[in-house]
Length: 105
Image 1 (spheres, rainbow, N blue to C red):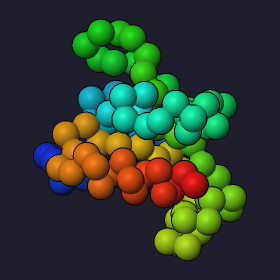
Image 2 (cartoon, rainbow, N blue to C red):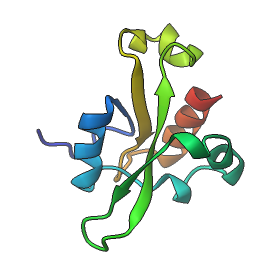
Image 3 (cartoon, one colour):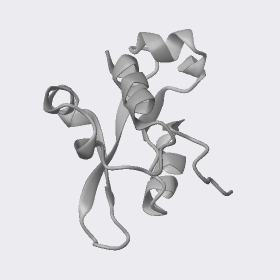
C-alpha cells in the first residue's frame, strides 16, 4: 500500500489505523484540532508512538458508528467502531480539518 498525498481525512478500523499511524502516515491531531474538541473526546483519543522521536501523539479519535450520525449516514455503520484522523501530508489542510470537525460534531 502506498499513500502519497492522496488522503486527507483517514477513517479505518483501529488495527489498520494503528498500522498507518505507526508508519508515519497520520498527523498529530493536537496540532490541528481546537482544544475544546480534543477535550470533549479525551477518553476516545488513540495515541500512537512516533517512529522517529518515540513520543506518543494523538493519532486519531475512536468513534462508535452507531452513535455518530455522520458515520451512520455515510455507510460506516457496518463496523462497530472506527478511528478518524488526519493524514500527514494533507493536500488541503483547511478542508481536511473542517471535514474532521464536521464528523466530530
